[in-house]
Length: 159
View (cartoon, rainbow, N blue to C red):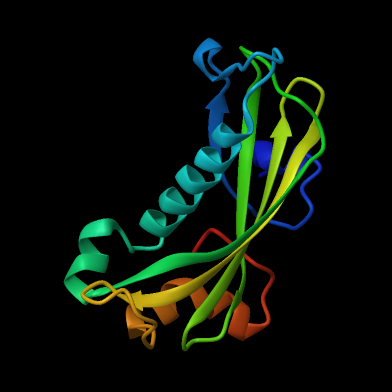
């Protein structure tokens, strides 16, 4: 059975996907969605993906660790406008099982199936108490690293 994502031109197989609709409040003086909203959509997707893998904010606090953004690279490929329906896709593409993880993102406009943004975000595990790098808890390694270490393609879905 095919998912709606299978029919879109994703860069990698089996993305974790959220839906976004561009609102009039997100439009800037140039008449399109302001770039700050793209970053928020990526963050929303990453959080939803983490929750789907069993790591929500409460779990991070309980473990005393979090994945903090180290570097973000975004390539804007097209403008979006009020009313545009977007699919924000996310893959965990690297996890060293110690400190670092990486996610790739792609945003596709549904109407014309055009990719409007690609991004990569590098994360580092930090201790919440001091904000300093620390080794990932085993729960993070399982949630973020199993697909990467197994050699399976990046995947949002389990089993």
